[in-house]
Image (tube, rainbow, N blue to C red; front, side):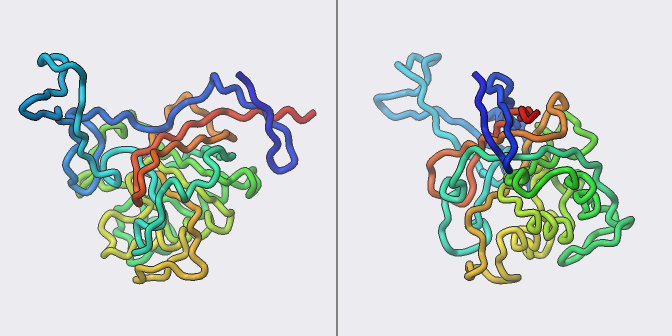
Length: 275
């Protein structure tokens, strides 16, 4: 099935048979990605004196109890409520589940080799994504095309799908200059293949999250400038067969009222039909 759409005054075609998920498959009770030393996501059979939810053990059907930490166990999307007291369900922060998006690939740089800023500070050996890199990659795209942005880091190792991020496998993050640039380009839905847009140990500042949603430093409440209808999706995996370029994104989350949920972003290539 193909659909026609107009973005920024230009006509495009999307072949829905070419869609591809960029979510990591979360295999419960098996090897899986994790962050911050969080326990892995698990599945347990629901049992009582009169019922067992396991057909292999004689039950009439399978009924499982799932335990997970969305922020740490695989691909997840979060709302501004991740950093403030006020509730903002993830599904409410996505007023349109279909939106234009750009996929780019970037090789992170050593923090010791760049001239950009981060609060509270860089560690010299940290790997970061800079404003200068983003400016170069995104110079070919309009703000209207950048409703969504997917950042794939190079090298794009398949091990990302099961990576455990800790002091021995310290994750990539963005400089504050990079995040400010993305806000100036009006990115509403940011998707990255690392576990946080902020430094793993950052004294609880979460400075990039605050820049993205416009929440004041060290505050835990929204203000009149806070941008509620924006999301951050972390720990995606964009396979190499997806080429850098322009896509239609379908950001899928469940209807559970919380600040973060496992999610399934789907990309469909967009082909220009303008002559």
